[in-house]
Length: 199
Image (cartoon, rainbow, N blue to C red; front, side, top):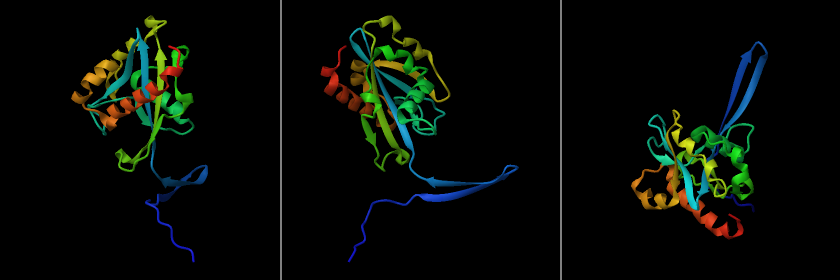
């Protein structure tokens, strides 16, 4: 006799949207499901000091306004999660990572270092966390400090925070989405593999 298997899920809602135009009627079939978010932890080494790229969200943001975080956002159609991370970093900080590919020393082969999928997280997002590390020791003059002047409607501050300063001050700062823990996770990941990297 077959027994009923139990899972801890709530089935996704399903909607059908019918749109009629001069081209005829089109039917769109949607499943309302959990969203995929991307998180970009960007480390940069300059003059042997490690920095992490952080932002401060504007007061116009619906979620976690006026709090610090690392660049993050949602996956769009027609892009990979890694591409989405690059786009979000650019949209929120004006840092176009492909411009610095010659200084990239680690990106986990474009794969996330961690996936957060706890239903207790904000909006039940499934978050793909990426780490990219750049070494500007050979060319400190190319360290993109100018992005600290960038602001948008979403972001009121962009900062390259030295990791020493981060560990001294993170408890005195308000963080969105527990991103201080995300930074610590990325530091741990980098420490685990740094012996295999030539800086």
